[in-house]
Length: 160
Image (spheres, rainbow, N blue to C red):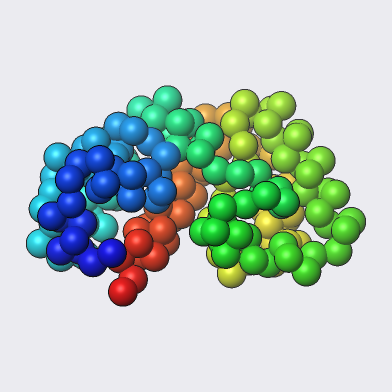
């Protein structure tokens, strides 16, 4: 999709495209209201600034749209982003699954990390390190990771 096509699309089509990038309905609605975007730089700037204005509940909604790190059934973009897991040793995958369960028990949401280009071991190391964070700090870190994922996906959406 080009930026011009996105700007001209009806709200339902444009909203569906944005929800692929970030699962927050409030973020999507705010992005739709700010259309049309003059260029990609403006779009990315709005995406970031809108994300920072949202409430923790909106962040959690976006987090819930993601699969767990290491899950077998993944959507196309998630599969590409978690590419470093495809050749991971079984032991690392088992540790990721256990870490995901522990993380969700501790914080109440899935472990979220911008996984593109990272090895399974790097993802596991990140998960284990973040398990020691206080919940308020971890929520801010996860929100920052969501912002990175959103930017990556917006780039894919408009990569033509």
